[in-house]
Length: 141
Image 1 (tube, one colour):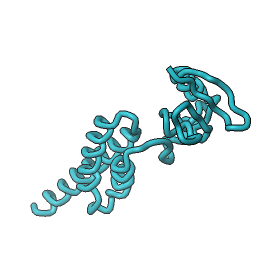
Image 2 (cartoon, helix red, strand yellow):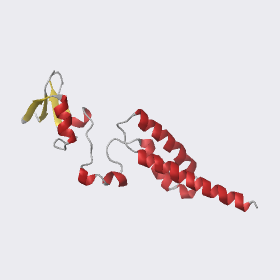
Image 3 (tube, one colour):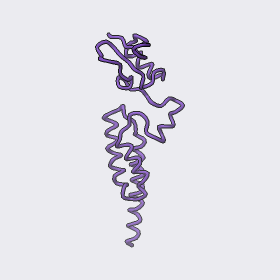
Image 4 (tube, helix red, strand yellow):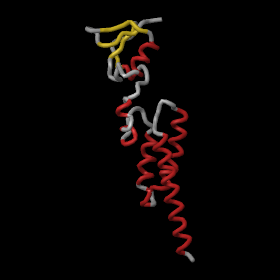
């Protein structure tokens, strides 16, 4: 099993196996942009292109609730924002549709985040659709 080196060509550390490399990434000691290399590779590449590295540290975990960080489902991001804008009525059905598609995308690609945004789009879109549906029914009486 080949050993992995990290750091830079001039100041490389290692070798470590892939599991140790993943552990260094999970612990936050190696950021996603840290360079890694193993025998057979043409050059040094960012660690994030080899293994999934969580972007948010524990102190920054709340940041992901406000803005998309790390690998995200684009559909979930759009669904969440459409859900927030669904009070304008027009985006509500699209928020629901894209939210459902985003949940499917996240299920297929578990490395992607955004489930909360997808659910936000579905729930807010549905609330607005029901609310305006009730208004339409009440106005016809």
